[in-house]
Length: 207
Image (cartoon, rainbow, N blue to C red):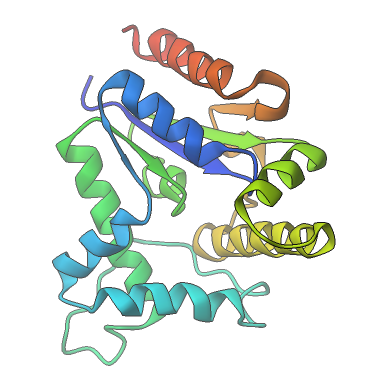
């Protein structure tokens, strides 16, 4: 087999990013999240700030939740008027994700990586979720919001992630059919989630 790539999608507060980092450390491989924005910026020559601004603009766009433009891999050249469009910024992130998968075994958090790499046989896709109380407790540890504000923040964040995923893939973010493994971190705990992913990978890839 080629490089083993594990993609991790996660509900806010479920600890998916923490689980990804723990697994990466255990396997001795890199874990990529927002670093992909910097790498896409360096590759394209587009200011990294524009990638972050695109995320925020999309987050608050009313049209975003109603449209779908599944990623096809097309990249617009610098002379094209759509070079710094939201779609092209995403396409450069996708290019970065594909190049990482070709270059090394790694873990990629979010960014629709499971869809972008869907045709790669050496990709294991994971979705981490948890019950509301668990997510709320973890979110309140990380933020100085009230309980009511935190609940709204979780709802908004997960809504954005769902809309972002649907827009760029045409699929529903929480649909188990698009993942190899779905784990409830509130029942298993982080360590057991890491163990489950590692065990699945050994069976899947005969390692």
